[in-house]
Image 1 (cartoon, rainbow, N blue to C red):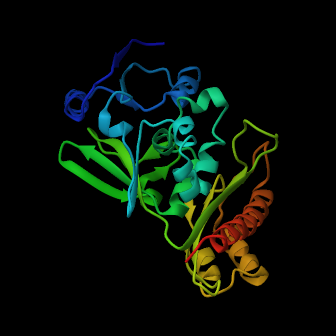
Image 2: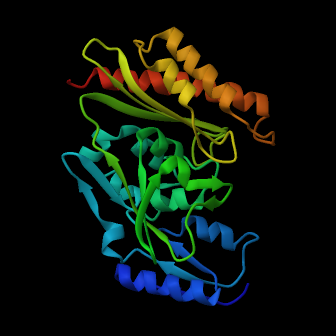
Image 3: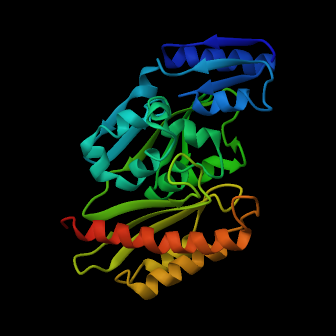
Length: 294
């Protein structure tokens, strides 16, 4: 293992300064929000020298705001902290369910939604959940701040859209209103503490009569990155999210998948499972939405 340096800035300016210096010098720097994936990487094949930049002390990355119109979640806030916020759990149950699946209780004390997204694993549980919920990524860099949709942030296996000198500050999403709700389901071979063979997140809105007026569906672990599936959403909109609509949405997810075959499941198996998960997650989201007031 090569030489490593560790930096723990306490402000945005310090963070950007360190990133800028390393980018200009052509040196590798890796931002860590929780570090849970990093430890696995260092014990594997990625042992190259780098500077570890820990953003746990950056105030903006630790901000949690549940406003009347918008929710902001700092990139350094752990899953354990998020799951102790009853209002947040009530507003975004699918996203918080996904976060609660990442590792053990001890791991969740460090793991973050931001870190899970930046790690860009095809099987990252929170990624399809955040895509389905309509999350947007707040990014800071040498040219200022920018934002992008969560579905555009991951660009490949282990690769994200951050440019040199940039880091993910946090995530924002519109506060769900009326009969809106989300859900996330995954399938794993074991009962717990495993990565998804397939996963699906669904977010939808119903009108007063129970007809779906808006939907977003995302699938994970069945392609090089989590995918937004517009055809699955279109199958739900304009329906009462009945069995026919659920079947059509599930079929759209299976068709959109491009999985691999490995020791944990064949490609055909994964295509079938992701369709089943879509049907079940959409039904859960529908029932949750129905229980909410208009």
